[in-house]
Image 1 (cartoon, rainbow, N blue to C red):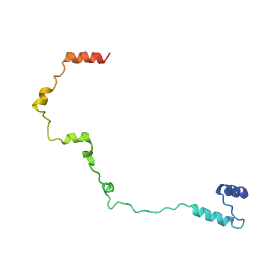
Image 2: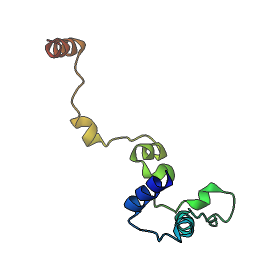
Image 3: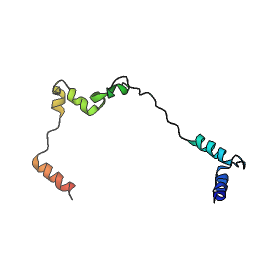
Length: 104
């Protein structure tokens, strides 16, 4: 049975061990394939997870354009020219007609 296993190992590994050193070569082969793990130092200097992030331009709420509207200093009051050029809002009848046209 061990001959069959050795033949399969020879064919899959491509290395043909000598008859006298077959057990020694198998042991060395297993040792060389053994995984090695090491302990690496953690990059943190303290326990604060925010220190691991790189600083970003516009980080936080400043980067989102939708949120920037909440940083306004007051209501926008248009000038008289802009206010006079605005069109009048549609009446209820006009809105109902438009709704019926769109719902056909």
